[in-house]
Image 1 (cartoon, rainbow, N blue to C red):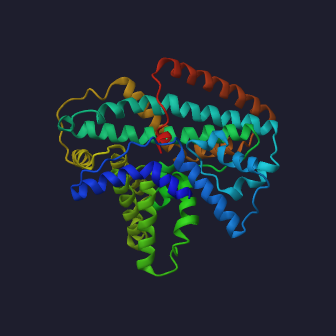
Image 2 (image 1 turned 90 degrees about the horizontal axis):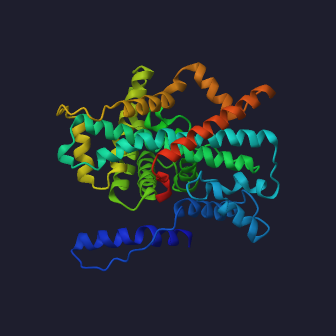
Image 3 (image 1 turned 135 degrees about the vertical axis):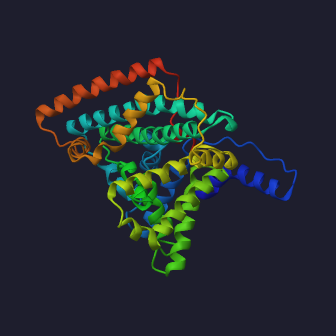
Length: 385
């Protein structure tokens, strides 16, 4: 029933249009409004059914406890996807502490700054490039658009996740992390352990393992990986570009499992990070551009080294945002900054440091408010999924 509702609202129109186009039929395709966040709370409804069925956790005692799990507002619209057994005991016995409230405030302010200071400012450049006539896009414009969107979607979505986790902590709930510096990954396999972590875990536990995982031979393992990432792409949106994006990542995962990781072992770690980042950036073009022909054209321009001499994209405001995004995407490659980040996310502070954290959070909050006041409204990217 859950999957049926998701299919009707999200995919019925897409499949009817595809069938109509494929067979030359003149079908009337209804315009169905998509309920916001349906992909996220559908998956959580499924985890409730499956976790109870498997005996991982007993069912909740009343209807309102169940509604608290599904409709908990910080995570309702765009995750993280919280599996039932991860939060079930907290629904009936959550613990609020001052440390959690301070930690939650800090995470919320960090997430807000990621969204409005980084994602929104760099996203303006991405929107400008992808709105151009593709014939006017040269190599510089293609890379500016692809890299801008790469940073926009990361800081937009990880910012939302930090805000959701922070709000939940302030209310006494501990929900799982959703991002772990994905752009420092040294392979696509590692990337998917760091990007949208809760979706990856859901796909593994409720789809990949039930399909047989890697226990039924190489061919079946290849098929299972391919199916998981095909459906992962389709989960993100009803469009062929999302399917291509899912197959693209699935193909690299299969290649890495069978031979590519062994090749990577002979390459310095920094080169592996750069190669993986380039693969991810290229894939984001398919994710962003609905028309597959247009996406392929932009990718071709990225690697054709065709320069028109138009450098208007490299303005000071763009370069400032771009440098900030690079710094905050890769700074954990330096051990000192990795320790700083761990200290923040584990809230490993002394009493005096907690007060400094509060003051820093309030300052970050007001900086974010100034950006909100100055810029146009820009909703979270994952609200449409």
